[in-house]
Length: 134
Image (tube, rainbow, N blue to C red; front, side, top):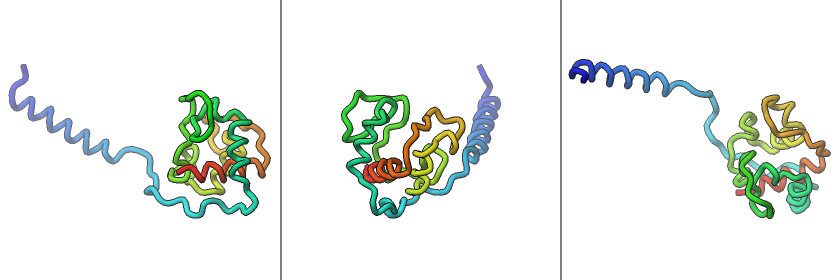
């Protein structure tokens, strides 16, 4: 059994460790609104929803409004418009979402999300759909 001074010393060391660890972590800007829905006037939200199904995104992601078995491989894509980051690495802006969809491994070589060969128009449609998910 520890003596009272030893217990106080352990508590003090624990508090010091807690204070030091509080400052650790990734430096990220605060959460912010993503701004306008999307900048692509000709993007087709309904087509983007269909493409999410056609390209098999639901094999890894749970997507609200798209019928498929629940998946836990990739993150759920609900509330994409409210997220601070895309792929955990880019600020969530329409252009960054488009960049991510076009070639995820080019943005983050550690990602398991493949480049599925989307055209720019397809990526814009998917991005426009994802940005409607609140």
